[in-house]
Amino acid sequence: MDRKKILVTGGAGFIGGNFVQYMVNKYPQYDIYNLDVLTYAGDLTKHRNIEKKENYHFIKADIINREEIIPLFENEKFDYVAHFAAESHVDRSIKEPEIFVQTNVLGTQVLLDAVKQTGVTKFVHVSTDEVYGELDFDPTTFFTEDTPLQPNSPYSASKASSDFLVRAYHETYGLPVNITRCSNNYGPFHFPEKLIPLTISRVLNEEKVPVYGNGKNIRDWLHVLDHCAAIDLVLQEGVNGEVYNVGGHNERTNLEVVKTIISTLGKSEELIEFVTDRLGHDKRYAIDPTKLERLGWKPTYTFETGIAQTIQWYLDNKWWWEQIISGEYKNYFNKQYSLK
Ligand code: NAD
Ligand code: TYD
Image (cartoon, rainbow, N blue to C red; front, side):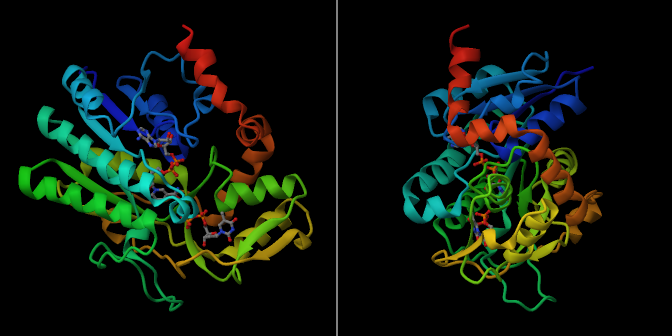
């Protein structure tokens, strides 16, 4: 059988990392290339169970570096690209917007140029529902693929800009692309700066959990493995040039999420600490996933089953998040790879 080459950018991060493991295990007949520069969010310890598999390959490279990326594409001739690499944390984007423009906009353009030069069967650009801006609290309103883009944070503005470039490279040069826009993910290997893993780790350590503003902002949560299945489907079946929203109708206020975690772990709500609100804090996100469902996708986790599985995973895998919080994970690359 033809051994396909699948490039995953940002495969040392949360969602890209789950996707790499999903693909390595599901498709032993394909070669999966994890390309990542290893920023603070890049962690290779999560792949210690797959790093010896024959179909897993790691490439340390920066998507902004054209001199490195274009020759790599020319040499390897990838069949598929799933592009996850990004700066992804809204709070960081409020403090330091520049790196978001560099990585998310310019980095995506370098990859598009590489794809244009060498040709691939499909380039899937993994974007976010945050590019649509915010909804109000009317529960009958949803983001569809036709909702105008109105990003509010430097993070979502940089993602929206990259979406426009991907669209333009399809319209102008005929590149075979899809854009996916997913709601908030959660699950194993989620970096503990984001709400759910931060809450779980803080509660387990009996530390205060900061809730921004009044805690009534709503996010639409999707288990990361359901997102991985969606990307796999779009890579293979997506109609070129189309956008697909990804979400499972799991809207919760932040306070509901935090209280669910606290009660599952049998701790006190006194751990909750209301803190100053995030600047430009989007009120509500909610996805209409009908178009992707028509392509054949449906989520397997409800929020209840997914959050229970995730909390259990954090209980069973303290080794992972404790070395993330301590910073020890940063030494893994040197220990395992550079000295070989
Ligand atoms: P993450 O921050 O956990 O991981 C990002 C990865 O990209 C890291 O491994 C990092 O080292 C790598 N990276 C950063 N800059 C790079 C560069 N210049 N070159 C190569 N690699 C680089 O992010 P995540 O939460 O896994 O999100 C992945 C993608 O999914 C992002 O594009 C994000 O916008 C999108 N997304 C995230 C969510 C969510 O809830 N987390 C929801 C929808 C969409
Ligand atoms: P986050 O996990 O940062 O994802 P995003 O900003 O991409 O939605 O935040 C999820 C929600 O939780 C968001 O409304 C901000 C809020 N939040 C808190 O209340 N406290 C926190 O410590 C964090 C990190 C987020």
